[in-house]
Length: 445
Ligand code: ADP
Image 1 (cartoon, rainbow, N blue to C red):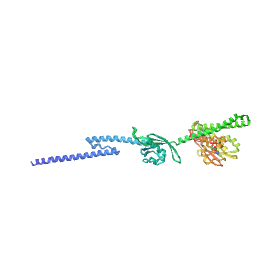
Image 2 (cartoon, helix red, strand yellow; image 1 turned 30 degrees about the horizontal axis):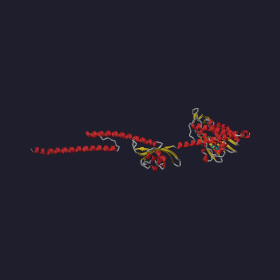
Image 3 (spheres, rainbow, N blue to C red; image 1 turned 180 degrees about the vertical axis):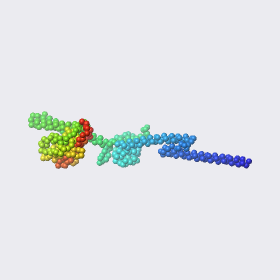
C-alpha cells in the first residue's frame, strides 16, 4: 500500500523530470545544429562556400541543410565565374596598349591601367586619387567634366611630356548607372598614342611641300627662259644658245628629281627588287671609280684606291644597287671637295662585314647636320647643292639601299677637314638564296 502510494507520488515527478531532461537535450542539440547552419550562412556571406556537414542533420533541419548546401554550391560556381571574368577583364585592361581609366561621379579614379599611368607620368597605383591630382592637363579634365555633365562622349588630343613629348588622342565617355539610361555615375577615359601617326603625317606634309618646291624652281626657270626666247631672244643667236642650255639643264634636273622620287617611292613601298649575289668588293670599287674618274679629273681631284679590297671575301648584294650607293658617295665627295684635294676609297674586314670607306679632304659637315643629311631633301647648303644639280635625295636612297642589304651607312666628319662615309655590308655566305626578292617596305626618313 505504502509502495503504491510512493509510486503514485514519485511516478509523475520522475516522468516530468525525464521529459524536461529530454526536452532540454533536444533543444540543446537543435541550438547546436542551427548554430552550425548560421555559421555556414555567415561563411557564405564572407565568401566561404563550404556546405554544412549533412550527416549532422535529419528531418526538417536536414532539408534546410541540403537546400543550404545546394545554394552554397550554386553560389560558389557563380562566384568563381564572376571572379574569373573580373580577372580576365582586368588582365585585358592591364595589357592594353591604350591607357584606360575609370572615374566616378566625383572624379575619383576607380581604375587605371599601366598604360594610362605611364602616359600621364605617374606611379602605377593611382586608384582612389582625384583625377585632378594625377592629371594636370586642363583639356583632359574638362573633357571628363563635360562627359559627366552632358552624358556625351568627348574626343580631343593632348600632349604629355616635355623632353620626349607624346601626342594622345583621347575619348572621355560617360558611364550610366543602369542599362535603362539612368544618371551618369562616372566616365571612362581612353588614351591612344598617336605620336607616330602625327609624325608620319608631318613627314608626308613636309615631303609634299619639298617636292612641290623642288619641282617649282626648274619649272619656273624653264618657263621664264622659254618666254624670253619667244619674246624675241630667239633672234639673238648667242642668247638663244645660252637660254636653251639653261632650259636643257633644268629639264635634266627635273628628270633626275623624278627618277630619284620614283626610286625612293619604290624602295619605301617595298616594290624595288634586289638580285642578291656574291659581289667582289674590289670590282665594285673599280667600276665606280671608273665611272667618276673623268669628273674628278675635271675638278682637279685625285682618287686613291686601296689594294686591300682585292683580298676581301665577297659581300652579299645587288651589284648594280651597290654601285649606285658607292657612286653617289664618290660624286658627293667630288662635289664637296675643293681642288686640290683627294678622295680615298678603302675597304676592310670587320667581323662578318666588309666595311667600305669613302674619305675626302673636302668642306666637311657640321656635327649638328651629320645625322640629318640622310633625310630626304636635307642639305647643309641648299644653294650649293642645287647649283651642283643635286636633288637632296641621294643619301636617303643610299641609306635605304644599304639597309635593304642588312648593312649600315654612316658618316664621320670634321668641318673644314673632310668627311668619311662608311658602308658596312654582310659577307656572302653560300646559303641558297632566292633569285630576286623585293625590299621590305621602309618607313619614311
Ligand atoms: P645632294 O643631291 O644635295 O648631294 P645628298 O643626299 O647626296 O644630296 O646629300 C645631302 C647633303 O649632304 C648635301 O647637300 C651636302 O650638304 C651633304 N654632303 C653629302 N656628302 C658630303 C660630303 N662628302 N662632304 C660634305 N657634305 C656632304
